[in-house]
Length: 265
Image (cartoon, rainbow, N blue to C red; front, side):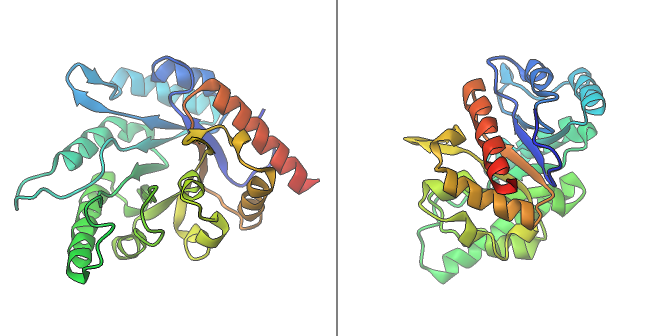
């Protein structure tokens, strides 16, 4: 059962049980209030983009169960190297957005490609990357119809300020991945000021050798500190437990219940 009277919607991913999207959504309906659709389109034979028939079923479940959706775009966004070309990341983003538009997603989660630039100290390289990243976000924002629907996520091993300027300049929203901050040894409470107000989606997951594991692996004091901020701020977006197994999901929900109980007394 979901904790009562929360200002935010608790969600998780569409890969909790070892099955396709629809069985997962049916399983999760009533257990969460949002499902993050993790979509991919590798080639014609390896794609899980929803058909119009599947979208219709997902909409029916959402209406009946007070469920919403967020959508994770499949590739890191980047402009094409050649002027006038459309990079494959933007092509796939467009196909995903068009396939899911009728679900009225609360957000589209995006990574901005910056693998080559993140370690650079050259102002010209950083400025050029910021211009390209801003332009790619603007292109995808137009696909969504609202820049605020595009939530740019902080990635592990990136500098904590990496996305700040492009989010400010593009007018998109933010997805704060708390698990990535923990993985890199950062305190989320130091990251929230000035950013939580821009945020539509939070990702949370535990660390056990790697990330995207149960919140049981996070010390209760750390978990309580995060939820005290979310409840007192209050945060009104989506909190996605970004794990990929039923055990990690179930034990994470238990950890959240216990944390909120400790906070509320």
